Image 1 (spheres, one colour):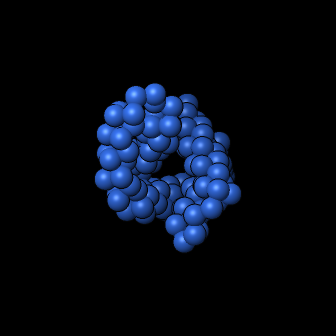
Image 2: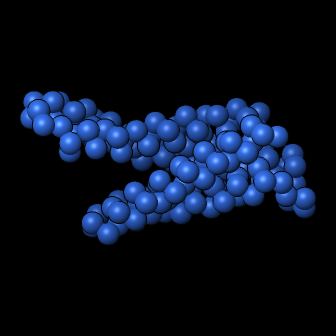
Length: 133
């Protein structure tokens, strides 16, 4: 069950991370018609961005709770260290997204994007260390 909640959270996080690629394609595309089409798709998908982020946050907390109950916090292995770091970064990412939603500025946008990339890297490292065990 621990792995299942982790996989579900990872899939939701990767889906939400795809927005960065979509917006990058919109900015870099030279074809105006393609930009407009992708912007319309992005507008429809952004309605679900916050909902997916909250749902993935629930699965991340469930995953962390199940791991803590199963393995405890006394003798931490590298998987648990990276998991705790990824959890803390992801919670900060959710907070920065909420703050950005309240009032969007360029600084908050960059902070949210940098937190997303940092959290994603830690999640990938956490997944890699769990494969090594």
